[in-house]
Image (tube, rainbow, N blue to C red; front, side):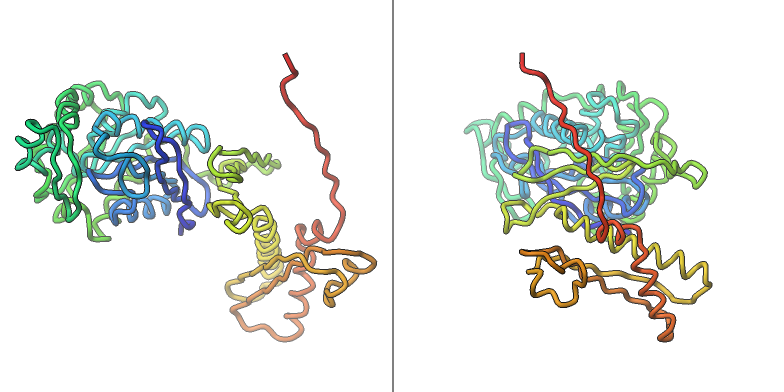
Length: 416
């Protein structure tokens, strides 16, 4: 199970805003991965989406983004090239380093594979690199518009049709490709490498996988994708690739899923810091976990994550569910799955007839949380009343209805 992908953006090599999505596991994050898509593709290609979602089920968070001028990203594609793609990858890494954690795993599909091979030496935190259907040379991509090469060289640019869309390819793009020796960069990789390729790939021949594998030093591995097509358009092929990637990478990632004996019961700090993106977006860091907080568009936010009050509602709902589960286990009640829904709103205290003592004697508005508990198992009326009583004993419920002390200090640099 994974959370809904979070929409993000960061500045790319040219200063344009690059659109990104972060797929987060529902539980503990073992490591972060950075995914680079194929030539003229986007982060939302089915292969990228399916692989990212499958990796989250293995505890790996995945950031996938659109290169300059592609998908939802800004900038001019015709002014981009392989070098700018590498700089976009490094910009994505810097963003992850600032807002989450630097990626330990780099994954590249097709030309994105060549890009991660070239960029990997500049990312010291990366422990492992995976290529999927990747060419062994950057200029392999010119076969996609070979009929227009003379026009591009003679006239400086040409409009070509790729995958049903038109793109402008400039002469500088070709010249830049010729300046990159991916094989030499592979020989200096100094990271674990997994080469994945389909033997029947008609876009990038499997001989490219052989070249990459032979150029790399150990540790290195090769996995055949059998009958998969170049784009891994079938979900089961992407699922298989992701499962292999997660299993292979586990020996190289520094973080492992914690065992019960490793869990630290001491309280951890909640760190919230601005990302610099949008008016309100913040990164939430709690122990091993990373989340986004934002405000809805109605109040000037970008709605890239839950609002602060959403998190309060989540805290109440989660605490209630866990408290009921403890009680049901203690009493050996067969209640089945428990789910809790919480809605929050600010209401006029004078009109809140079911708010009880909280609203008495208070003017203006108060916070009203409506909690709905669903028990899938069969429970009699007596048990139902007892569960309602136990729900009110949830520690977060008590905090919300009680009085908490908030002690605040302000730290900052003294004026020069």
